[in-house]
Image (tube, rainbow, N blue to C red; front, top):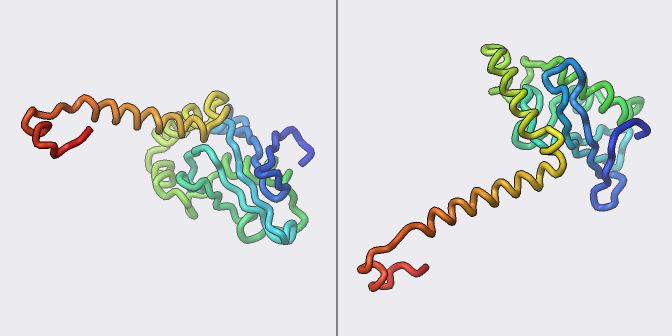
Length: 176
């Protein structure tokens, strides 16, 4: 890739890497920064790459849990004439600008977009702020792991506040 994208190899492999992707201007995703996981099959460019968002994004055509992208040009109509620049400068920006609610991977987002567009817009902006801000992408996975660890510590703290009656402690039923 020869454009203004940050590319980070995974396990020093040229077939697997992360690309820093900025949300397109004039969309709900503007200002957001996502890390996209890319895997190139051995048959690339004759077979399409595997593309997925690593940090969360709310979009009808992107699975919120796995980050998988539902985009015909990548999944079914791929051509060796396309390259990685097409994906990041054309295909993904168009997907974010023009969601296809008739073929959703995230049905909840599609229903929200169709039924309650103002709420959908607010949720997308909240996701951008929480999961795709500069602060969030400075290590989004690390931050999510850290948040999970902090939650576990809070749960452990709450559990350590539980006291046992003298009868339970003396009986030895529960060891702490």
